[in-house]
Image 1: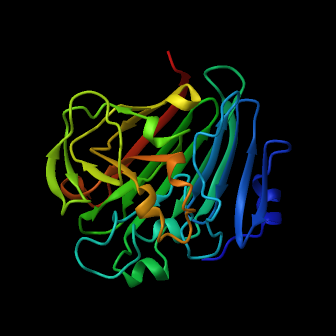
Image 2 (image 1 turned 180 degrees about the vertical axis):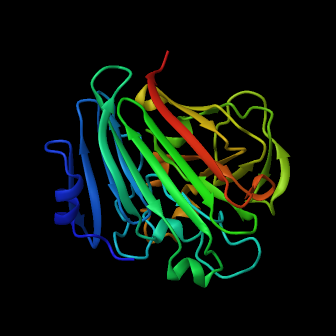
Image 3 (image 1 turned 90 degrees about the horizontal axis):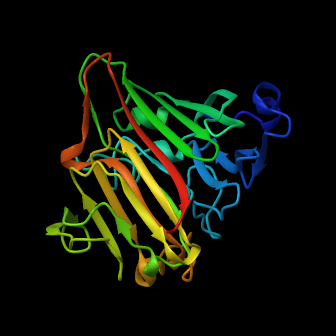
Length: 308
């Protein structure tokens, strides 16, 4: 699937002073400017890379080394992982975290809507259907809609429809990279005492200590049966990033630290302190099975407030 030229997108969806499309690298992107926020999204992966509410520093991290080339995942922002998370669990072929984040999505809707806090929000809806790439890995009977609502808060809704005659089983995640002043001073609340799988230690089952979770080393932890809410206490920026989710039974926490960042060509060796991934997901035992003709929606709302 090829990206529509930015000129065509501007003619069809552009909003003067609010929504403008252009090319960055080899990818088409949407640039959003509102009194309430600024944001950037790429049609490849329907990938939100920037969201900055008015009066705040950016809430999402984007690597300065990320490639913006067709077929290569963007490092940072909110990648969409579908129809599997990490390597494909059934041993079949396919790219890491599935094909959705490296496919070009269609923009189906763009409009200004009233914001609960006054002013306007921008609503964007992207869609993804079967393609040559998805059929090659056995996925032909699905439709996905991704709704992004941008304003003082950020709302994301990922809806998967089963258009086939058999149950559709899949994993999914909104793999959010949150920008923090220093990951070593950004405790997470909402996971105290929870059981997790430590992917840095042969996926052994462990229990998080009571109270806030503070990362001190390379961490890749999958918390099953954890519906949230969670909050990142970004101490250096004196703010709290609140993460509320619906129909997400898994929470994933990840940061590569210095040793994990070193081999990544699209992440600078000195960038790891400045982000923390807290992901809304349904993976492994929390994988989703949708009956024929039905849908499943994963929803996340992000808000930012001053630290108290």
